[in-house]
Image (cartoon, rainbow, N blue to C red; front, side, top):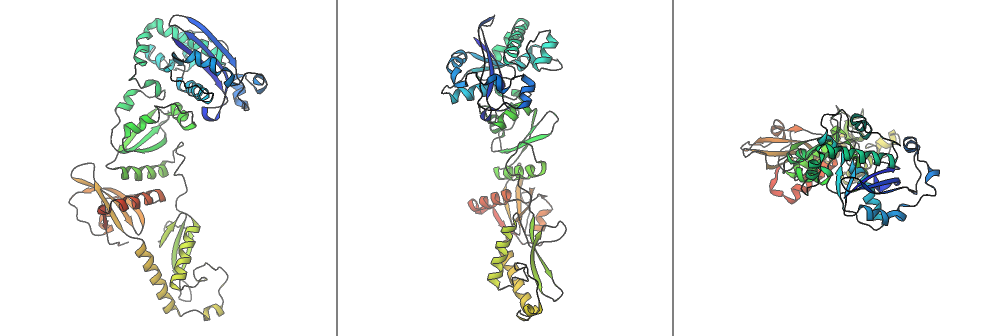
Length: 450
């Protein structure tokens, strides 16, 4: 038995949107044997663009039943049958989510008529419901309403069956078939070819633009996990609707994958990566000599072509460190711009002469540099004769790459010939420091020549 379903909703994902209309045609493989259809009060306002598309407005659903009022009857129709819809994951995610909220757990098999039509009628210019029905000569009445679209899907399903689609239905409903859970534009072969090792994967849209970057210990398993559950959240619905291609870069270790993922998110700024999108480092600690001969410390916005002593994501972070240096080495707050009132001759008379004060500044900087170590992390490479290397220089991430296993390294500059530079950020730096804390044997101290 099959239940051919169409719904109208207030938005694109189930966890934050309601159903405004549902139609179900129960089908025995030959004809319709039962029919259920109703408007539903979603208990939220229907956006104007939805009304423009469907014709369903707030007034029409004001006296309609709530979803919980029809949940028991709907569950009885859908339980233990094959749930069919055009782009089935969208309709199924909404119905499952709202049934669960009403106390019913739907675990039906799914069948997508988009995929079935592609297999039965390959090579058509479009497989959207309207275009597909026009290509096949199937009439649609009451378009963009649940009843009209569900009835058109019934006609499409029956047309597939009489044109040899039954064999595809049987294959698609096999337990090991992954197709019903995947985005419309992906096949099981796209998942099967993915490697089972660590790396970074990229989701592309129809224009080949990368819309999401992820990292994994096992790329194939992690990518599959995005699609093998029925969450009604926005990200999953966006993935199901958008993803047309998956590419990947294999990594030697999980740490390399973590670093590469973070760097790629900052480089590509993908649409559906919501975390790690904080701005790049904005502030830095600088040293300069004023016209009186005093060495001065100042925090300012980071300049591309001016060497700095240290960089900060937040101004507050830099001020805390600078105040600590002032207190520890008895520096002057005005000469460090912590106190920003103008310096007058009276202030100068209380200061040590430049040669003495500058000695304090140099000691403060030396202490800072001691706290900002330079070291390499060495780990296994992708091949037996190479090794992965990540370089921390003066406390910040410089870059990573592979070098021959027998390469002798003593300074950071020697390493840089083999490595690719990357922009430093908190996620990368914290991941590396956490890794060497757990794996001290993979940390190699170096001389910084920067």
